[in-house]
Length: 220
Image 1 (spheres, rainbow, N blue to C red):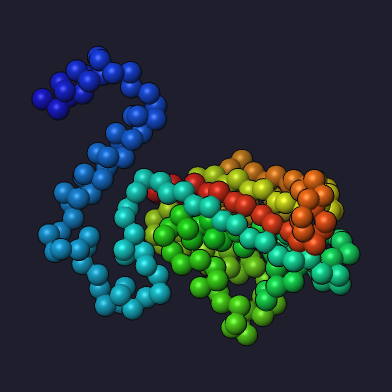
Image 2: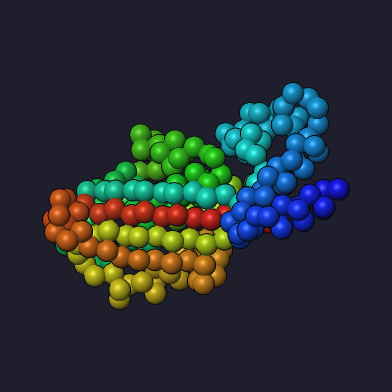
């Protein structure tokens, strides 16, 4: 009967790819609800899970999850400019508690956001001396660990870095190679873009740098 109803619907309504995806997600959620134990919760939470800082036990299991990250830092003379784990020659660098890597910071926030976890500022607070001057690759590896622990893998990543100077095109291959290593992903699923801010506001005046990242996580 269910198949007959679907055929009837298909005969009268144009089933687009996006509609098929929505139907698939709806059916997946119904199956998950049917399988869940009747305890009043999504599932039984152990004492160990309850005491963990990770909220993975409270996050619904979905076939895919999308996250967005953003970061911005002031640029000051005499500091290193590190983008994507690569030291970029420049007369200014990011003022930050850690190494100020805006690209890695927003990648971390995008992954954590997709997983429904606290942001980078909560997991690695800037008032904790432990993270003073820390390399941001530490934060990325922790985000990837949590992603894998929750049963997801990187589908693809798209990032935009906004800065007036210097030009990033000569450094993109090194940045991409570093991201592939940190994210344990092939370069075909990682895209990095760089934009100026047309000399507008602090970004365009070379007084700050910003980055946006969007990630798609896929269920293993």
